[in-house]
Length: 381
Image 1: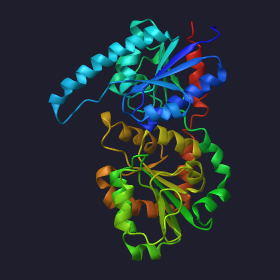
Image 2 (image 1 turned 45 degrees about the vertical axis):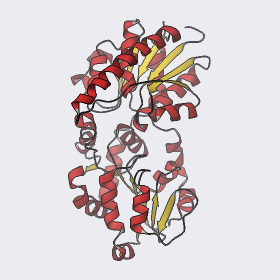
Image 3 (image 1 turned 60 degrees about the vertical axis):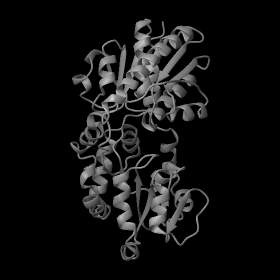
Image 4 (image 1 turned 30 degrees about the horizontal axis):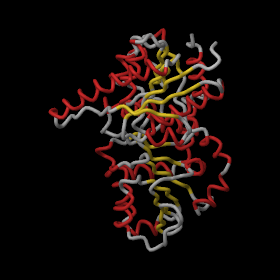
């Protein structure tokens, strides 16, 4: 094996792609400290900030997604795609990676295609239960395809598939033993059940609408102080929600406020490990990384799949759990009407909560980042 192997990791666009990519990079670096790792992302996307913050170099491609509403704008998309492919070929030629890894996102297709042309072994990390178009095309020449769900041979060559699961943020599982610290951090009581509501770092409009209608009802809040809610709104929605609720309590440090001692509303939960530690029930979108975290953490969950994703893959992710009685699903179009009644009924049903927790834990894939890193290292010439 080479003393200083080189790896390219490409993709991003959302935290669901970026967190696994960084986890894989960390695992490679731990196993091969002398290795060199280069990220390639899309200009203007969140990976251009998150990856350098994690200590890795990143180069941006001028990629952009297809415009489904205005087809004329896709001429610009095609131009940028061609430009990105040329830049990706130059990156491959100059960096000379031993292996190229794609985790999904706009940049992944261009980089892995350029790597294929240059004869560089490629590895795909498919996070969802329904494979995207780009990964299905790239899979024909990929040496390894690391997946998080069973049954992926309907999309990929069976002989190249390895069930590894999705890498998750390493600090989350460590937080499960910190319940006392978590209750103190959030100012909550250990004698009450806690619901954690998350829609991603940017937020989820339908989930927020559902919770907002509840919170605006002061009579309901007074009657239901036997439950506690941590509500992450996302940065796009926090200001408007704060104005709607007109909190009387003063703001407390980071971007959050409270409506009495039982309801905390925040733009972003910086200590998600502590939030998960005390959550008796989670309400979440059905992104692949979120589901992987919930499986490892053994958390009962109501999933509200986002309708605004390619191939409706979040619904497929959610159904993969629902079929095994490991989660409850509420459709986005029905959430405002059904989400809260479903959550209140479930949080009061200890037997159902325990059953969901037991079943979702069976789907957990442990040590995913290290297992994927091992497969990548096997391909070094």
